[in-house]
Length: 168
Image (tube, rainbow, N blue to C red; front, top):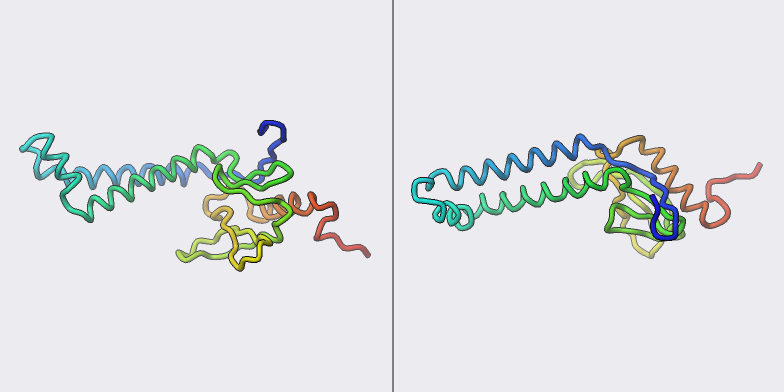
């Protein structure tokens, strides 16, 4: 992967099957909710069916919006699955939205989130006590140790002397 003038090095990829399953489940949930909203008024015409979808049960409409958002999220992750975590020698990128300078990365740790899903998280030196989520382990294609090593190698290799080197 080449980014204008710098060579991009892929550190982590995502599995395709969980993302495709998420798309299918969210699409089925959306279709089922829409069907349950529109089915009772099907004899009244298309206009009444659309009104029932938009202004019927507020909880079902909110659930349909959540299912559409879940589908969009899984779709975007699926499209970026081949190069989800990568670096260019200067910055570490996650997907197409977040990036951190390699010089600010101190460590990569595994933590469980609020839902109990283990996630690789970055410890970034920016005077903050919060770690940054890098990739959930169930979606990671490969081992967490390999990704951790790749990120730390890129981060320490850019500072000249690797942080994990000991001299005997």
